[in-house]
Structure formats: structure tokens, C-alpha cells
Amino acid sequence: MEKAARKENQRTRLTKRLLRESLLELLAEKPVERITVKELCEVAELNRSTFYAYYQDVPDLYYEMGNELVDALVDYVRTGGVETEPMLAYIRERREMFALLIYNGHFMDVNSPLQRRILEETVRYTWPAGAEMAVAGAEWKYILQYMFMGGSGLIHQWVREGCDMEPAELAALLGGLTETVLRAAPGLARQAAKKA
Image 1: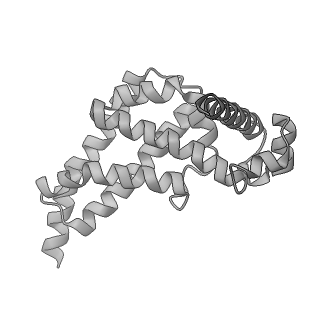
Image 2: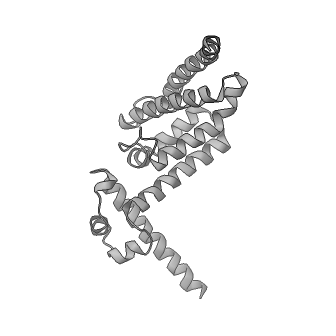
Image 3: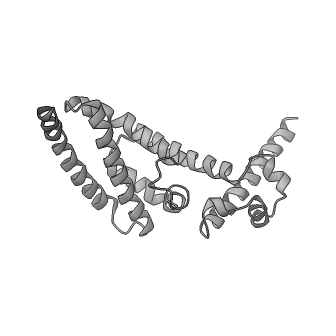
């Protein structure tokens, strides 16, 4: 019985790998919303019934892959700290996956489930810094949104350009921009309080 279960697990892993590789191949040509189950199964050389044994539709597979990538990045940041350069090196090592799953045209859409997860994790890690700088919660929320969208845009462009800068260079650029925003934040908060 154990041998049969092991063989089934191998078959499942192989099937999912074929579907994932086929989806990445198709994502290089067009956005996920334009990929059909029929088309995906043709590329993977699998029956549609096999696909439906594991997934509801193509976006289901897409979000599973994207969530796994985000989970891995979040775990990496949790264990390695929030140092920007190692995180960028991690992204560069997986550039194709990030380009196709995260930065595929939806990168600025915070309503995208993957981007929303990344924003939530960013807020979770950086929220205490606002209190340390005595920035009001409402203002800090907008500052974090501003920094997230700007940082996400820079990383997106870097990934699209084939990671043409070294992680250390991009980390320095992001760090300088973030420092400028954070230096201005308490002063802006005080100015707003004086006006009220």
C-alpha cells in the first residue's frame, strides 16, 4: 500500500510540475486571464480532467504558484531579516518566476491577491517604526502605501530590465529614497498637527 501511495505522490508531483512549467511558458506569451485550461493542457500534454483533479481554473494554479513564491520570500525575510540587498539577491536568483508571477502587469494593482499579501507583510514588519517616530497611524498607513508602491515599482522595473543593477546598488537607491521619506514624515506630521 505504501508503495502505491508513493507512486501516486510521484505522479501528482510530476503532473503539477508539468502544469506549472506549461503555465510559465504561456505566461511568457500572454497574461493569465487569456490562458485557457484547454490551451494549458495542450502545452502540458495532459487531459483537462487531469487538470481539474487539482485546480478549478488557470488563475487557481497561477495564485497557488504566486502564493508559494510570496511565502518563500516572506520566510526568507523572517529568517534573514529585512535587509534589502539579500532580499534583492533572492529575487534576482528567481527573476523569471518573479517576472511572470508577481510583476506581470498587475504589479501596481494592490487589489491583486499576491500584491495585497506583499503589502500586508510589508505593513506588518514596518508598522512599529511609525510609532517610534511618533507618526500618527493614519498618516503612517499612507506613508507605507507610498513607500510600498514606489519600492514595488523600482523592483518591478529592475526585474523587467533583467536585474541590470547589482542588488547592492539597487538596495542603496531604495535605502536612500526610503530614508528621505522617513526623515520627512515626522516633520510633515508636526506641520499637519499645527494646522489643525
